Amino acid sequence: MEKMEKMEKQAIGNHVNIKHVLSFDVEEYFQVEAAREGGMTPEKWSQYPSRVDLQVNRVLGILDDFQTKATFFVLGSVASKHRDLIKRIADGGHEIASHGMTHKMLTRLTPEEFAAELRESREILSDITGVDVQGFRAPTFSITHKNPWAIDVLTDSGFTYDSSVFPVVHKRYGVPDVSRWTHVAAGPSGGKIVELPPVTLRVLRRNIPIGGGGYLRLFPVKFVAAGLKAAQRHAAAGMIYMHPWEFDPAQPVTPMSRRNRFRHRVNLSRTEPKLRYLLKRFDFQTAERYVKSILPENLETFAY
Image 1 (cartoon, rainbow, N blue to C red):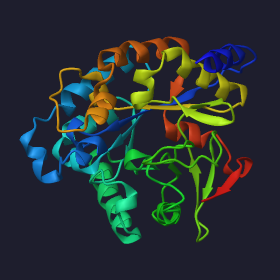
Image 2 (tube, rainbow, N blue to C red; image 1 turned 90 degrees about the horizontal axis):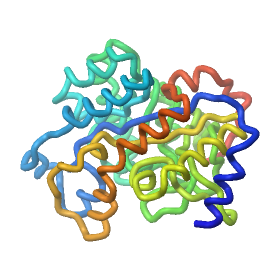
Image 3 (spheres, rainbow, N blue to C red; image 1 turned 60 degrees about the horizontal axis):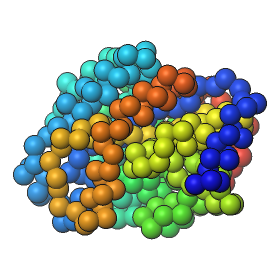
C-alpha cells in the first residue's frame, strides 16, 4: 500500500489535460462469471428478477449530472429484451458497443462461435440504435494468449477497436506482457485492432489492476485517480469500467462461493460516490471518440 501511495503522489504533477474513457458493461447481476461458477446457468436466469433498467437509469442520472458521455458495452441478450433502454442510452449521446451475446468467456467459444456472437449482437444493437457498432469488449476480459485468434475474428468482423485485454496476472484473464496504454493488438493471421486496456498502477515491476469493477470498489478511489494521472503523464487516455449492477446494493443474492460473493458485493454502496469523485476531477469521453482522435500508426504494436 505504501508503494501505491508513493506512486499516487508521483503521478500528481506534470500531467497534461486529456479526456479519459469511461465505460460500462451492461449485463444482469446474475449473468456474471462468478454466478456461472456458482451454478447459475442461463436456464436459471429467469428465476431472478431483472434489475438492469433500474441500474442503468441510476448510471444515466449520474452522467447527466456531470454532462459526461460514456461507452456502454451491451450484452446482446439484454438488448433484445430491453430495446427501449438501449435506445434511451443511445439517444442520450452515449456510445453503444458490443459485449457479445451470451456472456460466455471467449475461452469457451470456438472462432466460429465467436464470429456468430459478434454478428448477432451487432445486428441487434445496430437495429435498435441505427448506428453501426464500432467497439467490442469480451466478457471477463477474456482475450488472452490462449485465444489470439479472437483479434483476427474482430478484425475480419469489421470492428474498429477492442477493450478485452487486461494487462495483469489473474487466474481468469490477463495479458501481463502487453502495454498498459492504448496499443495495436496483432493476431496470428495478421489482423490488427486498436486495444484499450483498463487502467493499472505499476508497482514493483508488476501491473496492479485498479481500473474498475471490484478493484475500484475495494481500493481507495485515489488509487484510480493516480492511475488516470499516470496515463496523462504518458499522453494517453486511461480507460475505466464499471457495471450498472455495481450501483445496486439491493440486488438479490445469487449462488456463489464465499470468495466470489465477497468480490461481487463488496462496497456496492460506495460505487456511486467513487464515480462522482472521479467525474468531478477528470474529463471523460466515449471510447469511439477517443479512438477517432488517435492514429493507429503512431501506436506500438503487440503480437498476441
